[in-house]
Image 1 (tube, rainbow, N blue to C red):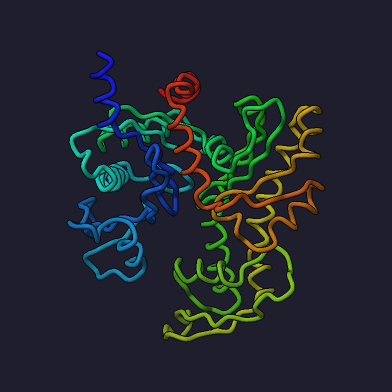
Image 2 (cartoon, rainbow, N blue to C red; image 1 turned 90 degrees about the horizontal axis):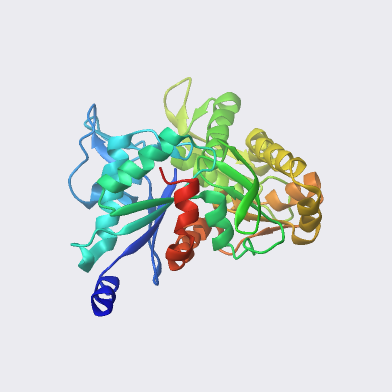
Length: 351
């Protein structure tokens, strides 16, 4: 029996999946992150029929956003961190899982998927059902802030408070953890996508210029900031469609204007952090004076964000190493301890 157990362990495949609104990352136990692609699927317009071939999912599909012909639509099947299109999400997960399985194609993997802490039981069921239908033998759910804390290397299992602010594409998760559990948590559906939307709306209002999601994201990355900083680019040329003439044109946008455009979503994130701190027990709050706040997720890369959070809270703020992959790395580490920790998941999250 021991020999048989070792045989099945060798041919088993455990996957950790960060199922994000913008990107999906897959980690394999013992190998780390093996896949990082946009959560985008190309379908035939008016149907849920996914295009055939690798161009239908991931990077190839994202390049189609806003550029598809009349017969094709590129869609993102997750919104605000949860599944908005069950069938398309299942097809996307199936594609990613099969791409990673490789020589283990005959093995149904165990899967750990990160989910926002604020989602409902119905939304959790949609995630587990999608993964099971996509080929998982067993699906476990882990809350995103816990996975982010593990991936960021925080001492979340120790008797001291750790605070994580995970700013993804659809949700921002703020949590204070101690002794391997979440003591206080807030989840708000304001994150990177809302920053892109704020830029799109600002350009509409101020310049009568219509731009797409990918252009807004590029603007955010290149000159977006939460606070003024030395050496930031002054202006960027933005190309789009004039809302009055309907013709293509460009406009020169300053970094100060983009900072103004981003104020609303940034303030919503700051308010969430402050509310979470106000709910913390005094001993946990005392620990945070020493331990500070750690930022994870793609939104953590926004210039000046640590500065405005420090001004709002008085706590030291650091950005985790490679914040974009924190959650996925956390699921990979969790896989190493799956037998030890899975009962916690089953009791708290697995339905």
